[in-house]
Image 1 (tube, one colour):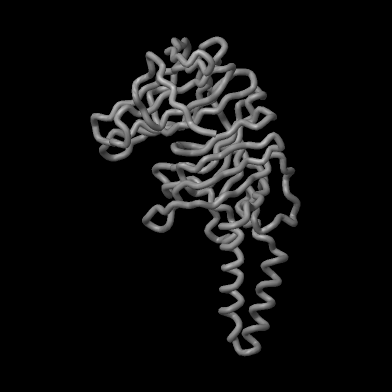
Image 2 (cartoon, rainbow, N blue to C red):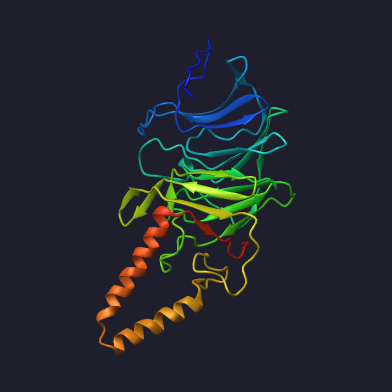
Length: 304
């Protein structure tokens, strides 16, 4: 297979950090930044919608009614089976100190059949400000947000959230505290600019991105999957599960007890093997993270 360039007569203005979805033979794009990677005061953002006809190789600007989102970049957009495109978050950073007005935590939906926008007022375990996050829509109609940059906090979100778009209550649910620094086996979702897909089975696959490490960001090439259909865990949750909603750490109490007993035995025998044991456990974790996709079970769901 090889790539082929298509050169339509008309096209949208150049942009970056926009979104694109596929529906009914068209690629639909929304928003973006007009000045590339520039973040100076002259950068401009848009909230326009364009559709590319896959068969005719032609662009059309779409005039939409309703309550449009503010111009933005680095947001997410996914399409449901009913033709509704769901847009969350993003930013409009144009230099200077960050303010609330430069970031977004709103949810909008565009009905591509009716060409009409509406803003969704949500409740529950709210995601808050997010940009450069990953997003998918599962077969049950649940909108998922994973990771992303979270301004005014630690810098990156380590959480995953979902909202059931088929229900009328419009409540977010969360898998809180994925970024659990006390749990070395916690999945590293505390990163931005990763990409996610979802299988028909409900597995959400997350790859790459930039991870927070102290005061610097580093590229991350790990791949993980989360089972969006997993039931609530029992008291025997594994060490890869996030902490539960009451703040207790779900770190696999049984395994932790075994580790403590082994360390105490090694100390009693002189302590020489303690470093080797701990170092080996760390290397095994690292090997699993780099080379093997790892299941992330959904922790207890929490609502505000």
